[in-house]
Amino acid sequence: MPLRLEHHDFAFIEPLILECGLNKSRLLEELQLPASLFNSAENNTLVIMEYNRLLRCLVEASDDETCKGSSRQIMVGTTPFLVGSVSEGTALKDVFHRLAEGYNVAHGGSYNSISMTAKRLVYKIDDTDFPYTTSRFQGLSNAFIESILFSLHCLFEKLTGASLANRIIKITTKRSPTQDPGAFLNYMRARIEFNAETYSIEYDGRIADLEVKQIDENAYLSIFDAVQHGDVHHQARSWSELVLQALEAGPQDQQIVASNLGVSLATLRRRLADENVGFRDLRSRMLQTRAQRFLRAGETPTSVAMSLGYSDVRSFSRAFKNWVGMTPAAYQKQLQST
Image 1 (cartoon, one colour):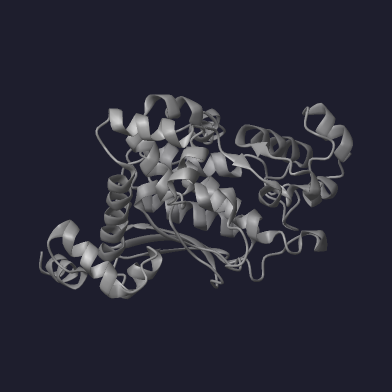
Image 2: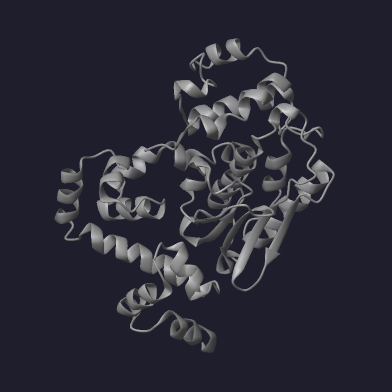
C-alpha cells in the first residue's frame, strides 16, 4: 500500500503555503484536495503522491527548494544538479559528503555533516541555528526535518538501486518520545532515538562503498515511486515478506499487522499457512535479524534488549542463544576476532 501521511506529518506545509504567498483554498482546489486538509480535527490524510505534488507546486511557485522555509533561498535544481553531477560508479559515501557540503554552501552554515566508521555511515542534520523563515513554523520543524531524512533515504535507494531499510541501524530525532514518530520515520522501520541533539540516519557502514548509478533530473523527481506504488510491491511479495516488513515497522501484534496489510486476522493466518510459516516464527526471525544488526554495530546487549522490548537482558540473552547458539556477548567477541 502507498505510504499515507496523517495531519501531523504534513502540517508544516500550511505555513509554507502562506510564506509562498499562495491562496491556500485555491491551491487545494486546484490539486483536488479537501478544503479542510489542514484542519487536524478532520483526520484528513495524504498519500505520498499527493504530498509530493503539493510540495512541487510550492517549489515552482516560490522558485525555492525550501519552499520559503529558509530565509536563505536555494535555487530550484540545486539537488538535481548535485546528484546529476555524480559519476557512474561513485561510492555512496562520496555522495553523502557531496550532498552535505552542497547543502551547507547553499544554506550558508554547517547544518549537514557526515560521520563514518567501519561500522557506521551517518548523515546528520543540526537545525539549532537554522534560519527558519517564519515563527509560524515553530513546533512543526520535527516533521519538516524528518521529511528531509526520509527524502534522503529514498534518494540513496534510487542511486544505488538497493533496498536500504534493513541497513538502517538507528534514526535520531529531537522529537519527544511522547509524540507519535509519524509516517516518515515509521516507514524506515528502524530503532528511533528521541530527544537527540541532532536529526540523523545511521546506516550499516558496509553500504559506504556501494556504487551509485548516474541519474538525471527526471529520475530524481521520481525518488518516491517505490513508496507511491507500494500496492504493486504488496502484490508481488510473499506474505512472509510483507509480515516481516510490517513487523520491522513497529507493531508486533498479529491483529494490528493484519489490519495494516488490509486483511482479516483469519486471512493472514491462512496466507501464512499456505507458505508453511507461522506469525510467531516470523516475529522471532525479525527480532533475531535486528538483534544481530544492532550487535554488529557495537550496541551493548542491554541496549539491544531494551530496543527489542525484552523485560531484561537475561531474557534477551536466552532468546539470542536459542537463535544462534551463543550469548550476545560471545557473538560480539566472535565478530571482533574475525
